[in-house]
Image (tube, rainbow, N blue to C red):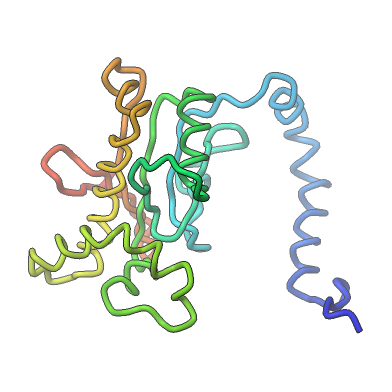
Length: 213
């Protein structure tokens, strides 16, 4: 017996298919020329956005961007690991290399968010069901955790979410080809955080604080 259920019996999947059909009927005719241009001329995104995988945070929606405008890397807690070229698998670093060296994006935005589950686990402990990959991945952010707790903040969750953005920006600079482009002025880095409770986007400024955009 197959362990795959009939797709037509999956109401959640059928909802997605219904969304696709609506896309084909209403959106595709209006955007067809745009997609044809992107297919012909390739992609030239305005920015690389490094965001959390959280389903409640959609960078394209937050920035009002359409197809071809953003190159997006999503992972748990919007983390950038340090530069470490070796034989292991590095999905985030590979996508970063493609965006910076091949696509030549002019800016990188690290986008954190409120109520991040990865940060919550980092602060409060990981469930047994998230120890194979999530816990080791989040070790990248141990420094952010230490910084947040050392400040004795009223809201350790928010403080740590902001510190992960700062840490990822520091780690970006450890990639030599990122540092090279920063030095020549062809690339700029930005940090931000989106509050899913209020819809407010805050940006990291030079004084180390986040302010409404």
